Image 1 (cartoon, rainbow, N blue to C red):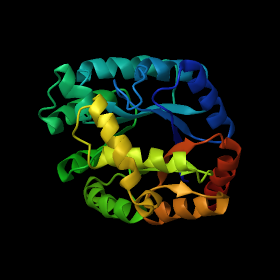
Image 2 (cartoon, rainbow, N blue to C red; image 1 turned 90 degrees about the vertical axis):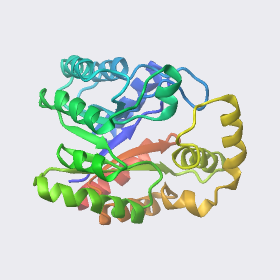
Image 3 (cartoon, rainbow, N blue to C red; image 1 turned 135 degrees about the vertical axis):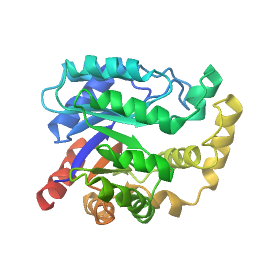
Image 4 (tube, rainbow, N blue to C red; image 1 turned 30 degrees about the vertical axis):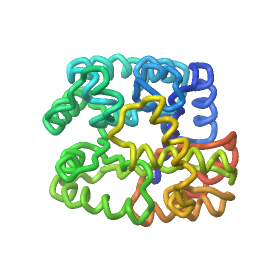
Length: 288
């Protein structure tokens, strides 16, 4: 069966996140996922991922919670284990995504992102001792091999179905060697029923952060550059990695990801459209 996780917004307050989680639970999402950053493009102060996930787990009935993805450098592997162990007291349905982090979350704060493979293996091993599934956001081939040795791979943002399949095949080669039958191939997909200018601008920001400005530190000048450059990103690129339109169009796009090998989604839902997307979830789950 195809699984769905809702990616929660970074800068929302606790009450908003509780309301979004309640809606996600109502419309058959399997998980809610929280990103892990200490700065945001809009300048708002992000909440602590582990505190938020604990609160959401305490106030949920069925839905699982997870990190997508937690930065392995801003906490020692032993501290990560403690955070997950504490979260496990509130929920028996967890999924912990781990990633090597972004420059803007580490270097400005004196955190050196050295030896990423060793750090990732140590962090994943600590979480696995708790019998909690670990999935890894992996870009390079060696990190993808580590991902293949755990429970799943999380694709990077802004990948079209074709690009997703190309990267998935790199992971799948190692998964076959590790013989993991329950491996998760997670596609990160923005979804909206509103074809509006603000949506395409937001998706352009997302694309630029994953490409041109991936290894930059957030400054006021950077925000101005992204604001200026957002209008230069061709709409065809933005359409290639997003699902926008009516229910049928969104289903077709998600089916393209499934045909490319995705068996789980991390959905970034733009607009207040839970009921409509609930029908998309119902259709896809009933046909897979």
